[in-house]
Amino acid sequence: MDAITLLKNDHRAVEELFKKFEKAGDGAHKTKAKLVEKIIHELAVHAAIEETVFYPFVKGVNDTITDDVLESLEEHHVVKWLLTELLDMDPKHERFDAKVTVLIESVRHHVKDEEREMFPAIRKAVPRSSLQELAEVLARAKKTAPTRPHPKAPDEPPGNAVSVLVSGLIDRARDAGRDAVRKSTQSRRRPASRSTSRQPHRAADPGTAEPAVTVRHLGEILLVVVLGVIEVGGVGDLGGDLAEAGVA
Image (cartoon, rainbow, N blue to C red; front, side, top):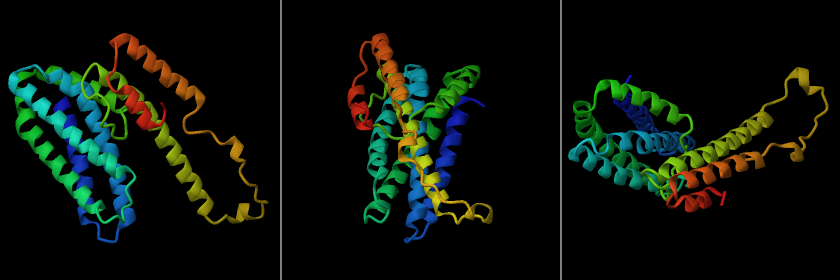
């Protein structure tokens, strides 16, 4: 697999989610909310690896590809603001479906441009061996990429190299906390089995719960920030991005 194939696979995965959303009924609010949560995750990760790995690699290969990259960055910017607005939007809101529809149209336009213009131009200009090596870097970047949109963060090097790492740590800590709460809620809703129904119920001690982001996690995040600032000599609007994430 090379980098372009990997990115196309991401496109196909998101398109499947789009189709499921479009097929959901008007009253399928829970289903749509879950689909939008997945869409936000997939698009946030995809945009992050393109902006930190793929676009910097191909930008400058020739004037046409550079123009394509700059246009794609602007399209990402628009999409990330839409994703941000959808993050906490009630699926029953009268503009929820309309906003998702605009998001879908924007992403489909972006994908069409990339796959019909940018990707073919890159294949002609960049050796396949380089694209294969790049795919490995993209795959690794996916494991730590942000899972939520951060439209105020830098989207080009050197600033995004640090902000993406920090945002990824924060987002994944949030995700872990959210998933833990959901599992706890689901377990409380399940009826007790016969083997456990005779046992006296013991309430969980709220004081023993592990916070989603511990002091140790915050220390590690701040260390990354400090090292990043020293290395690149400034990271644009990283402070604003951390404030948005609830850390600063």
